[in-house]
Image (cartoon, rainbow, N blue to C red; front, top):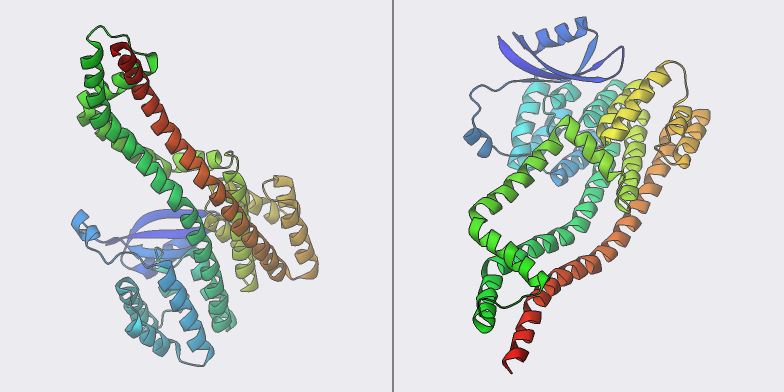
Length: 407
């Protein structure tokens, strides 16, 4: 018996379900899930003997750029009439990514054995998302795989572009923050203690120092005396915080917090709306059912607050409500989204309408990121200058006073 991990959707509630089960093979797992009224999205065998060293020296994850190139090339080759197995073999041969080559080799062997491409992709959930897999399945079922792959390539490119812009906007302030902390600890460990000795030598043991200087010397003395405790505690605190954010409760609290932070919350909302519109449009255009489209889109939004809201909306739509009406009542989305959805529902062109919404909000994200980037730079410089100035004032003031006394 082998232990299999699975991700499935419930036929009743439409919610995503994760779990593990022991079975002889994947077919037995699929049959077991079907009896439980679950639709399998991915089934993977648990690797035995997986150690930390194995994970450290594994081939790693597939980069988003490599996935975009693969999708675009596969779309072009399938559209040109190249047989699927031959196209996959060609892409596997010419791929520059070792991780992608290994995955494609596995996919090719499965497709040659008669497994549909969508099912073969579903066995690699770390590389191919639920959205990707379900769109490919819909394309295979409708006989328009090349068109679906083209849509997927555009979606992957847009998502990758947005991620790069957000990372680029965050890189500069992150570097400045690290430099600020490094400078602070450097001054406290090496500079302030020496200056403290100089002031004591000049003014004597009974010299009266300003409160600010006394505070700085106290902090410096504590760090110098307990650096072997302070630094590990700071690092451990950061690591624990990051680990807590990855837990379901911590992730939800963090996402709720960022939606309350001024300036940042508007960007987050625009990113989520753009992602919702593009993902929903792609799945709806591929012919995926409305309930399944909503469920898959919810897991692709990247924010727990919006994810839970959309999963709750599935129940309302299942009871006969229009999605546009439900989203208007939720209040999380801008009015334009529910209005455009209503137009799409009336005209039967929901995918086309939402594509325009996605383009609009992606442009809004670009403008917002450019705006906040131009503000962050001077703010961080002021913070750095203020920190250094505070330390300088606490040191130079007493030195100047002692110099006057000596004169």
